[in-house]
Length: 70
Picture 1 (cartoon, helix red, strand yellow):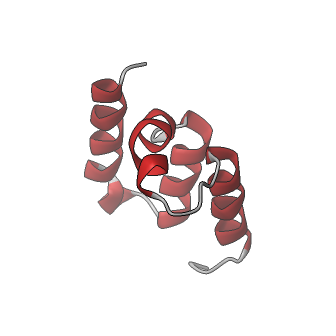
Picture 2 (cartoon, rainbow, N blue to C red):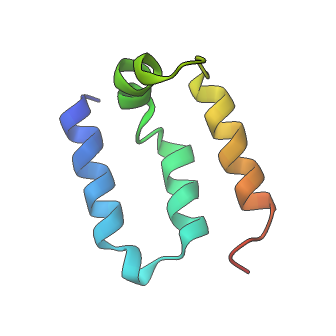
Picture 3 (cartoon, helix red, strand yellow):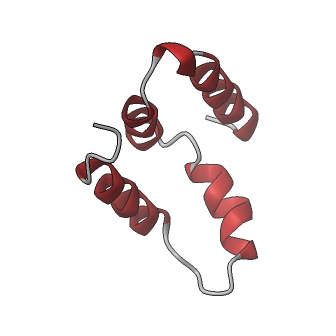
């Protein structure tokens, strides 16, 4: 997968957001690593303290487990 494809996939995901719930969107991001390459290539370089993509995914799982949107 390349970055353009990743962004296109996420754009399609957001376009369908009206039909989806936030937890569904987060699961899609997690399961398909939609932003992994972008995070590792761009975002990590902007952080004062590096945080691995796996740690970010663990945080997203915690958000899902919190049932915030139930």
